[in-house]
Image 1: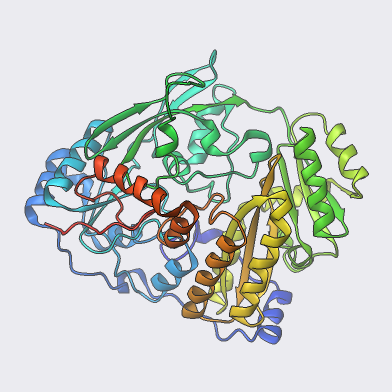
Image 2 (image 1 turned 135 degrees about the vertical axis):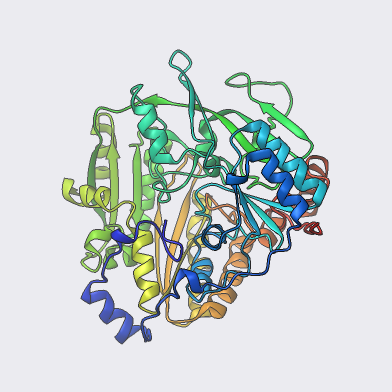
Length: 512
């Protein structure tokens, strides 16, 4: 992946003339911004002791303890806009001292023992796609790269469960499962680079969540290495044997330990998926149609609705950006008979647009992060944020986020879509483009976090908490909830080495 941006540099794209004109004339975006060269990125001086490095090398092998410039740069932060802007300026002040690549569960346990003894912070690292500050733990840090844990261990076609390792990237997992005629059905925007362990640690939700559910719905069991030992959780589809400790690990973002194995529900690969587009007059009308589909149980596998602004810009179809239409575009992807869902959409006032809009979305479904890189290079600040709420509260939540962004940023371009729906509610995913700089954006993001909490939404539906949302998360779960999580962390991670600062505020360890 590009160290200063997203994905494959060969897939970088030029901005259409319409978007360049919009940025220049309507938003006052300034001059293009060039990234420094990789070798010019400024790294902090390592503080990890030679003794600690030697012990880590004894565990995983000297070749799998990397301290070179490029390895440290590539394991610095994640892929949020603030992360990328700092990297493009050559600021890698949060770079790890070393990158350690264990080969399996036992090696992970031993690495955590060494780091606990030396009080060295450990940041689990999968695809590096966090957009909420989930990979920043300060100096004196080991990045624990799980890339060598990349196997499909077993497939149980009778139970429809597969065991896979956490460092397996999503496309590789799909390729291996396809050999058995199976799929996870999990295709988030980070699909090309994210890992299965990252999906679990952040409670990821994919574009086909209407048909396959969230990633945490797929996890039937997992193994976790912690500084205090190992956890092996999940021995039946459902259980009444106390609280489900799997749920304590899912979404924990490496604060308690490292996921080293996943047992996941799999499904038969569909013979085909048919994508199509529908037009609704308003976002409210389209939302009502989605609610009815969810509550009547006739959901397609993919269901997403762009608001008026996102439809006008054409962001739902990144390959045709700048050529949008009026109204609100709904994309549906059917793996089974589309008749019942189509009937509901038509009854709710939707106008069928045929296959072309759906096929265009499918073709460009992973292109939006590349578009963000082009906008950043053009001098714009563009970022995303998301939340979720109950259907009855969704309009209030939608208005609260938009009004706050406009109040804080002047005249930003704010777009929104719904891409994950449930019987009781849905998510809201916002994309923001502004001519304001990083300090102004970070101030606006704090204000939006407060607005989401006040409006009764969750601080994150699928991006996670990281460091960016930790304060708002604390408000969401309350003081007692924070103390419960701190008690769990203290028991599993008594030295406080595991990704300090994510999820809940805990002091980082003193390095040794």
